[in-house]
Amino acid sequence: MAENQRVTSFAPRIADWQTRAGRHGLPWQGTRDPYRIWLSEVMLQQTQASTVIAYYERFLALFPDVTALAAADPDTVMHAWAGLGYYARARNLQRCARILAYETNGCFPRTAQALAQLPGIGPSTAAAIAAFAFGAREPILDGNVKRILARYFGVVGDPSTRAVEQNLWSLAHAVLEAAPADLDMTAYTQGQMDLGALVCTRHQPDCARCPLNASCHARQHGQQHLLPTPRQRRARPERSCLMLILECQGHLLLHKHASPGIWGGLWGLPQFDTPDALRAACGTMGVAGGDTDSDEPSRLAGISHAFTHFRLHIEPWWLRANACRLPAPGPNEAWVPITRLGATALPAPLEKLLGGLYPPSDANPDEGGVN
Ligand code: SF4
Image (cartoon, rainbow, N blue to C red; front, side):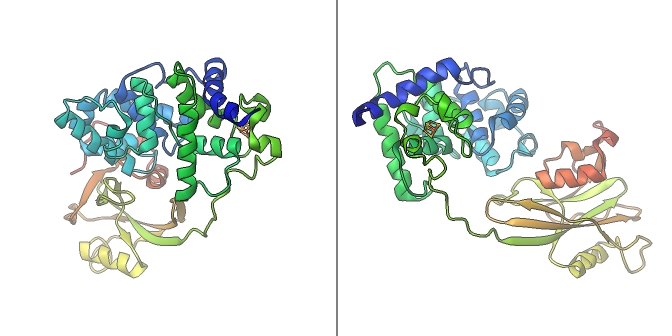
């Protein structure tokens, strides 16, 4: 196939394939509502569609439009997001909703350039919203599209580097400019996502089913597993900390993480660097040691959690204090009824840890909240 034909046929072949064989039943499809599209695109940024579906539907039930999300209690937003990870996305969602609700009466900008000025909306997400909601002729370049373009055009080099990414953006623009004027932008945009998720997958590309197979560089040269060029991996640093699970009168002492931060806006457990520091804090609160009749804190089995840039080893320590009154919480701390843990915005590893210690079946949702 001639080179110009490889370029001109790229987009229509993907759009045709999507219409015939792509995904059509996802809950965020079949709408032009930019709020619903924006929400799905942000949730899908680092999470697979199969995981996003339940979160998306729950989020929409709680916050059906921009105004509802803008007015919501940030704790409720974080709780609805908890488990999806990358919590900056949830904080940016609400920042963005507030800008739209208070500055544009809840209306979304219609161009990718204007959308990309809003918090948490990068150029590819902005293009996807503009294409799905307004039919804009804008290219996307998420991880799936980078992989397809790198394989199809034989682009060598790590796509996370600036030069290679610029090259891929140029190709994304070129294939769209060369496509017919009547290209269905919804089918094309969705088709790139579907092709990357279902056919041109990272580890097992199914070239026999691919609409691009007749002129794909990687297929012709047997380079599917060489492209895109893998990122040079550095060893992930390890960090560790101790966390105190302090139980007193059916409550746990929780600490609110500052924003911005890796768990910013979520509730967590008080953290310490050493067992001595943890014991000293218990002594200062009057819940262990000295004249108290509480036991000393005891160490539980450790857990690990992988973040993008490091791995965190958590050593939980547990103490049931016998104090007759709840000790005064420190700054950014609160005593939370154990029965309300299920309704509290916790990071996923702590939700799992505390869920194991205090099973949700014991919960009574009518009991009081954070105090
Ligand atoms: S032919 Fe194979 S490697 Fe090329 S784009 Fe299609 S699935 Fe990917």
